Image (cartoon, rainbow, N blue to C red):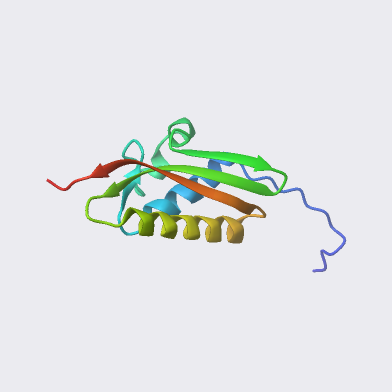
Length: 115
């Protein structure tokens, strides 16, 4: 089917982008959770308002800047973890959406120590 002359209007809710960001961030080895102890298994179960407490987006046309609040596991290199999260989030957002990621900033909220 030739769709070259067809125009589509697709919008992606910020909440959906936040879910992508959260899943990406919590999949990196050394990340314990998002701020508020939101883990990869709980992301789909929480309210968008709670997710927006740890992930914020600024969009401008097809550009997005992302800020993430993370908890990391004790004993891991914070700089390495942060870089891996930034790379994965940028890669996934750009491959799954029409957004260009301008920046991914990370704040380490807590270090989680195993008892």
